Length: 117
Length: 114
Image (cartoon, rainbow over all chains, first blue to last red; front, side, top):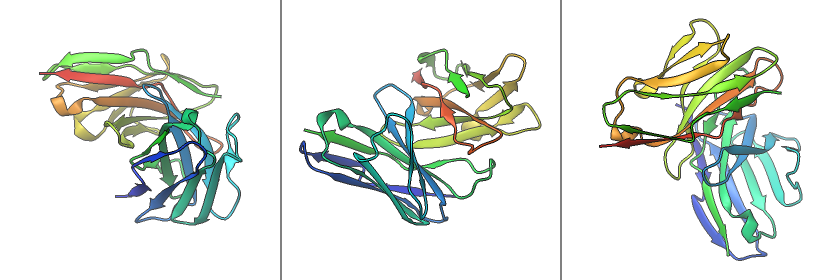
């Protein structure tokens, strides 16, 4: 089955530094990837849609200069949290869909727990 | 725009008992419906989906859900739960047009007691 690998699973960084999270589709090509943020005991909040070879589409209220997304190939998308602050601490999850068909459910990575100290 | 309401934030149940997790949606157009499960510190895994056809959908791990258009519901059921079913369950809806990006409910925490 389709596998999405997300790395790292956990990261602790100091305030003011940047952190990069990778999302890879291991056995399929993902033209579109999605980045979500999940707060404790809450649902997933879509942050942005990442399209291979083009700029990401950010949801309203998400700072694109703070959350940099790069989708350089059909199997890799990265999310960089720049100048991280404690309020950026959260669980970040990526997902991927191989095509635009509604029959293609989203395949999720295992998430990255970011803690900013 | 579509929305999803999961009426119960937490559902405690004893092992081998039946369970129903409720989900209601709102949309002005036709929808596709999904249930995902999330185990602690992991991503989401698709349990089942409704696209069209039979309103009773069977998924993995013995779960099933029924699409009720008149009540705009898509409740998830399992006749006998196991300890290993303890997890967070998310209902999601996407519309039949546009980008098919699903909207997720707030989640229901299923807690199975021995």
